[in-house]
Image 1 (cartoon, one colour):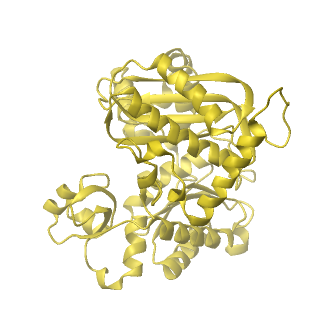
Image 2 (cartoon, one colour; image 1 turned 180 degrees about the vertical axis):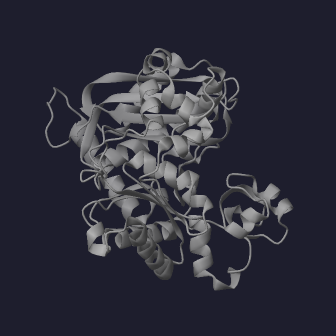
Image 3 (tube, one colour; image 1 turned 90 degrees about the vertical axis):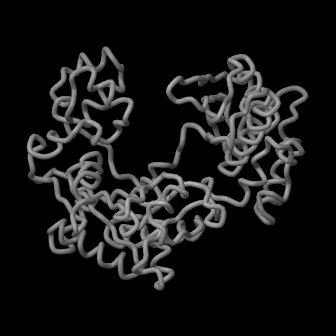
Length: 412
C-alpha cells in the first residue's frame, strides 16, 4: 500500500549498563548493573546487563537484593552526563539514515524511514540491521527495533517481540493484529499499567483483543477521552507524526520531585515548593518564556491509599520571577493540602508567552527581579547549580545542593 508509513522504534538494550561495559572491556563477561551507591549497598538498580538479568536481577529493585541474588555482581555508579553524550551519538547515527528522528526517552527513539528506506535497499528489516550493526560498532550498544506502520504499533512490536528475539528485530507490518498483539494480556499494551489492567480485568477485559473489541461508548462512559485513547491504541490507530521537534513549543514548564522521606510539616513542604519553583522559573527564563497559570500537585507515600491533589490558579499577570510564582504556588498548596505526609511534589508554569512583550503595570517590579535572577542564572551556568543557594536549601528539608550534582536525579 503506497501510503503506508514505515516507522521504527529503536530501543537501546540495558542502555546504561551497555555503555559502561563498552567503556570497561574488563567487565565484558561479568554481570554488571548501574546503581546508586556500591559502597553502602544502597539505591536501586537503574540498568542491568543481560548476564545480570539471567541471574535474576531486575531493574528498579533494591541494590542489596540484587547483590544477594548475584554475589559476583559488578556495581557501577551512574554517569548521566556520559550517557547523554552516547545517546546524542546514537541520535546522530539515526539521523544519517532519516531526518525524521524523534527521541522518546534517553534510550528509545522513533524513526520514520518511509521516504529513505529505498536508499538502503528497500527492505526495512535489512535497513534496521544495518543501523543496528553501526550503532553496536561505534558505541558498543545493541539496539532492538520494532517496525510497524505507526508509532504505537512500533513501540508494542519492540516491547513485546523484538526484545525477546536474539536478532532484536520484529516487523509487525503485514501481520494481522488478531494473530499477534490481540492475543497478549492487556497489561502488555502500551499505556496500560498494573492499576488500569486490574480495572479492565474487573470489566472482563483480559487481552488487548478484548479491549479492541469493547464498544468505544462503554470505555468513554468510564474514562472519557482516556477511554478512547486506549481503545485506539488497542486497535492500532495512531496518526501522530514522527517529529524531531515534538518536545518544542511546550504548553507548560514543570518539574516534580520525589522527596527522600515523608515531609509532614508545612515548613518542610514550603522549602520543597520554593526549590521546585525556582527550578521551573529558571527553565522558563532560559526559554525566554513567562507564564500566567501556576499548578501545584502532591502525593503521599501510601500508594494503596492515595492522598494528595493537583490544582492550578491563574495569576493576575504573566511572570517568570521566582518569588511571584512561589507566592501563588504556596497559597494554592496551603489551601488544598490535607495535612497528610507528602512524598512527591510538583510545580508547573503554564499559559506561556514570549517574555519580550507583556503589559506594564504601575509599580511593576518584574524587570528589577528579572535582572537579578538572570544574573544568578549566569553564575550558576558558569560555576554550577550550587554556586548560589537560598538559605532554606541548607536546612534538612532542602534538596537543591544534593540535586546540583545530579542529572535526572542521578549522579552526573
